[in-house]
Amino acid sequence: MAGIKDFQLYGILRVELKPLIKDMPLIGCISFYFLKNPTIEFNFTNIADVLDFPGLSEFLRNAIKEQIGKIMVLPNKYIYPMIKDLKSEEIKFIQPLGIVRLEVIEARHLKKADVGMLGLGKSDPYVNIIIGNQEFKTPTMYNTINPKWNFICETLAFFSTQSIDLEVMDEDQGSKDDFLGRVSLPIESIINDGMLDAWVNLKDTKTGRVHVKATWLNLEHSIDHLAIQSEESQELRQTYDSTHLPFGSVASLLIYLDSAKDIPLLAKSIGEPSPQVNFRLGEKVENSIVKSFTVNPIWEENFSFLIDKFNPDEELFIELIDTKSNRKIGDSSLKLKTLVEMENMTSTEPLILRSYNYSFELHCIISLWFSTSPKTKQIKMIVQDEISSLDHVDNLPAMEDLVKGTVEPIAKISGLEGDVIEMSQQQHRQKNQEEGKNFDPKILQAILEKKLSQEESASLSYSISNASIATESTDPMLKITIDKIEDSEDPKWEIIAHRARNLPKLHDKPPDTYKNKSPIGFVELQFNDYLDAKLPITQWFDLKIEHNQQDE
Image (cartoon, rainbow, N blue to C red; front, top):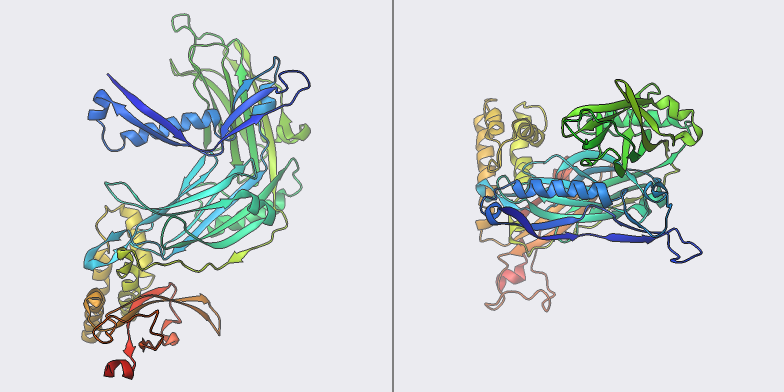
């Protein structure tokens, strides 16, 4: 025998008491729902515990999470009626506030979760995005603590008290991914401002910030702004890769699936069906929960489709199947232009499903909404990094700092076109290489095959060697990050001093920088050397000791 024990749910559960009525019990219904997918924990029992292998627990956890999401994660609710004749759609069919569009652009100074070749620190970061019952994941960027994802996603928001939760993770092949930090963006602030464009410090970690952009789109039963929204959608598709997710939504189709009555039997030998409803609009398909062994199923589920290209002749296809025999019981379709012509662009009449010589009713509500941009107020924040020197991993030089400072300049001199780091990212994505190859040797080989001069080859060899043994130097040094935060004729710079090492002793004791206010040493920075840098550069600089310190 096998089973599950110690099953637990963690999440924010909201309880609603409405509608209020004049007579006892004063409350018409009690509703329960999670604002976002809860965390699920459980253990296997007996043989399942012995035979557990990587991926099985995650597979079951995702399957359970999906079923819970269909029952009691927004926009779905679990209800307990307190009075008779309560119309469940009045409680369960939630009207959306609008669409939130999230762009996860880049991050800087992430924690170095792995130590690779040459003793260099790096991470393979990606971002998990959670908005209600919707979850998204950015691509993984390899060998970098300053990733650029340029990822975009969209979803419906139903309450201003919801939030957008981002978790930055380090991908590890064959083991559990490392946590790099999290951030939460309240929906209410995005609604109030219309647009949020910000660098936000990561929480629950010592270093890192992420650049995000959130845009709010209102919804209305009007087609007046369709042309403007379609133009904005086209501009977005030119900016982002449109192969991974639909975005640039101009409309939204909401469906509340209630019930069906008197479903015909396909054959007496099969018995009562286990019906499931499938909705298809374009390439997207939504499936209802399976109701076992019944001809009068009740689903009470919500579904939604975001539409990035509105075609009035496009059809919503509805199909009812028997999951026992995998046979179609009946089907129907509805054109979008039919909804546009209806009052409030909403259909409340039962759909007639037909198959062969019989027909029956499917009770549902189908509503069409069009998006419109509010008057936006763009907010831009530059947030100071909170970089700590306590984490020993962050004392290591970053892989991309080495590439930017050594390999890339030599590559440009030798005639190799393109961004070396981006070339490495593309190779990782195309070949899906396993963990452990911190720097793709083919890139270095491509550079060397350009027939570098003897002087260039010697320079490259010396630079890599010098970077890898920098931490072994006994000279006084200061670790500094140089970041150009404003690119103009008179640029502004952000200078972060991380830590010092090998400071000279005073009277055979380490210097006390709190009591002793006299200068110990200084570093000279030539900003002209960093004008072309596209990313923050972190490196160790020689500390020039003051004469009085040398004398002592």
